[in-house]
Length: 95
Image (cartoon, rainbow, N blue to C red):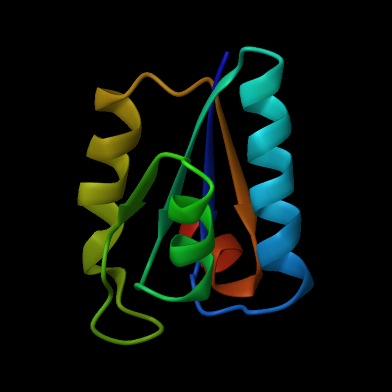
């Protein structure tokens, strides 16, 4: 199973730790996962430090919807089975 986690990328508390811990657990049991953030920041940094697959798709501003087509293309090209959003911005963009 391939899982994509999407997050804004600017959290530096519990959400960041939760995402990285979840992805590390998926790696241990043999599931493939990737993280996509909308900006470089604490989440992508911590994920990379833990050897996790990270992609960044920068937004010009919080409600920048120009990333919708590239996001759909990224998901389809990488054959993800599940997309799991974390946080209000990721939820808003993906809905």
